[in-house]
Every structure is written in C-alpha cells, then in structure tokens.
Length: 341
Image (cartoon, rainbow, N blue to C red; front, side, top):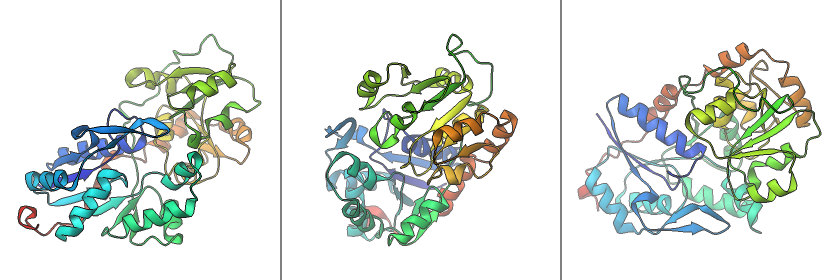
C-alpha cells in the first residue's frame, strides 16, 4: 500500500475534466489498495478568479503545504495543476529535495490569452518553468506530448483518460421529443475557450441543445434564442441528455482531451468535431465520429454512423488503464518527509 498525495487547484464543486479525472484516478487507486490524499482549495480560504468567479484561488502559504506533507508522509507526490497550490507544493518539494510528478491538463496559455492581453508565449514560459522541476509530466494524448515537446517541455509522457460504461450507456430517448430533429447536443463549460458559439452559428437543420453553465451563458442565450440552454446537469439527468442526442458536437479547439466525447460515445452518440488536438487522438476510428474544418460537414457525416460502432470505440478507454499509467509514472519521494525540511 502506497500513500499518494495529489495537489490540485481544480476540485469540487467545479465540474470539469480535470476534477473528473483526478477523482476517478483516486477511486481506482483506492480499489488497488493505495491511500490517496488530496490537497485542494476546499482546505483553505479562497478568492474568486478575476473574470471567472466559478474558479476559486487558494489563499494558502508554504507552512500549510509543509504541515500536510508531515501529516500524510506520502510515498509519492503528484502536482496536478499550475495554480497557487501547485506553485506552493512545487516550492516545498524543491526546498526538501523531494521528487514529484506533474500533469498538463488544460491549455492554460490559450485560456489566459482569450480573456486578457497576455501573449501566449509568456504563459508557456511560465508553464515550462513550472513543469521542468518535475521528474515526469503527464499529458493527456500523444498529440499534446508532441506539442509540448516542440515548445521546449522535457520528460513529457502520454496519459490517457477513461469513461464509466456503467453510468454512460445507451438507452431510449427521453429528451427533446417535442423539438425538430436531428438533436445536436453540446456538453461543457459555456466559456469563450470552449468555442460554443461556433456550434450555435451553424446553419444546419435540427435543434441545438447546450448542456452546461459558465461565464458566457447569459450572453449566448441572448444572442441565440433559437438554441436550447438547459443549464448544468449531473447524474442520470446528464446521461439522459447524452442518450437523447443524435450527434454530439464538440466545437472546442483548445481542449487537451475532451472527456465529454467519451461520455457521449459510451451512450452510442457519434461525435462531430474539428480536427485538432483532443479529437484527433480520441476519434482515431472514423466509425466513432467525424472531424472536419467545417463543423456542419462533420455533423452531417457523423449522423450517418452506426451507434453500435460508436459504443465499441468508447470501450477502449477505461479509468483502470488511466490509473495504471498514472501509478507507473509516479516518482518515489525516497525520504521521510517529516525529517526532510
């Protein structure tokens, strides 16, 4: 049994791929007999992130991190995010000469550039500085590994994602039955970096349904009254929205993976996306979804796919494999952290 400490600035009640991944990996590791501890914003006072109040920034200091390490005495430390907690944990590990791993989950540089006049290169310089201290940096797909390597990142390794086939599964349609088909569904954060407006702009027959909340929701609701915004959903309700879709539209050009694509495919729903990082690694089987620089073309092609083939493709992605890759790449601390100060 190993004690594993995961440090993350992204945690509940946030609803995103980072939280889902770290949560599921922890569950799988616990099933294998390991003990997983999380250091998250829930343990500290926080303040809202400017321009994005749904995300809370931790008001912690080095002493808090040191105290956590001394309590847990982890065999492995993984720093999952590059925010305030990640920076503090990185510094404590360097001060104590404790090896750690890190992970690259989101296009932080592009997200910042979409909101503030900050050059992408500046943000990537910060990210290189952050991750260069890690023994290994885990990235979601081979395409992301290649991209980061081309930008000067070192020791980056691929790390897949999974889907819960017992939760996301095909079933009869129960939503949208009074709307004109086909039913085109987009699930995710309603924010500028998710490119939801590219979906809403399309001149295609059928009904556009957006499932999710976020800072751009009110703006897009006003601009596109013909679309249906159902807000953030979870549990069986979220599954029912997937199950009722004819095609899942993934307009993002900045995601590093796109867990929602797996959830849709597990329900038998083909995916339409742009041929960019994320989709090109997930939709490598053309029977599962279609990619095109014209999203309306991708939608038309995806609607012709066999839902049984789509489900078969989704079964290739498991949280067990995701957790196994994570565990195999962890670095041993090799020290009694309580004595390493």
